[in-house]
Image 1: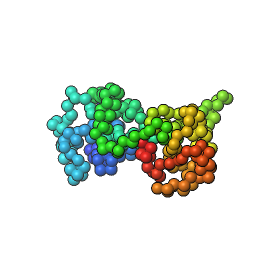
Image 2 (image 1 turned 60 degrees about the horizontal axis):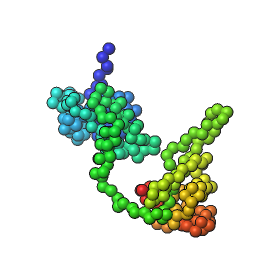
Image 3 (image 1 turned 180 degrees about the horizontal axis):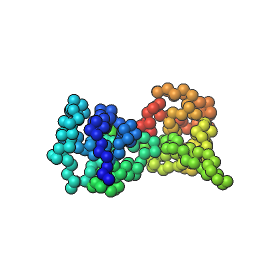
Image 4 (image 1 turned 45 degrees about the vertical axis):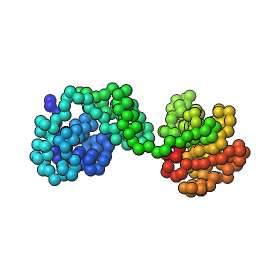
Length: 258
C-alpha cells in the first residue's frame, strides 16, 4: 500500500516552523506528526527552488506545490546529502546530545539517501566549526589553574539487591595546561561534595594549584556577583587552609572555563 501523501498545507506549516520559527526537526515532528525524512526532504526541495519563508508565505498551496515539486527543484540523487552544520552546532549545546547521536538522526532522516559515514560526518562538522569566530585562546601555565564542575547528566548506581540505589553526580576537574583530568561520582552537589571533590582531585594530582576555577555554584558562592563574587565561609576556610585562591566563572558565562 502506498504511503499517505502529506498535504501541501502540512508541508507549508513544516516550512514555517523550520524557516520562520527555527524549530529543530524533532520539535517539528512532535508538533505536526511528520516524519524526520519528510521534514528534511521538503527543506531540501525548498532550498533547491531558492525559496525562503518570505517567498513561501504568500504562495497558495497549488502554487507552492508547483514551485517545490517541479522537476528542476529535485535534488541530484548522485550527490551525497550534506549535513546542516549550523543545526548540528546548535543541537550540541543541549545536555546529553553527542555527534554520534546527531549522525544517527541524520542517517535516519534520509532513508535510502546517500549519506556520509560517521567519520566524514564528524570531519565535515569539525571543518565547518573551524570557520567560526573564536574567542582569544587562553594560555595556561603548568600548575596555575584547576578547572572544576559537575558535568553532564546523572548516572544510576545499581543496588546489590536490585534496582537503582541513587543517581550519581559526576564531578570533573581538569588542569588548564595539561588537560590532565580527574573525575569521581558523588551523591549530590552540596558544599561537602564540591570541597570533597576538590580535595580528592588535589590528592590525585599530588599538589595544589595557584587558582581553583569552579562554576558559580550556590554551594560555594555566597555572593554570585559578576565581577567580585563572595565565597561562602566554608569555601573561604577551605582555600585559606590550602593556601590557594578560588576564582569562580561569571554567572551564566560557561565560556570562562573554556
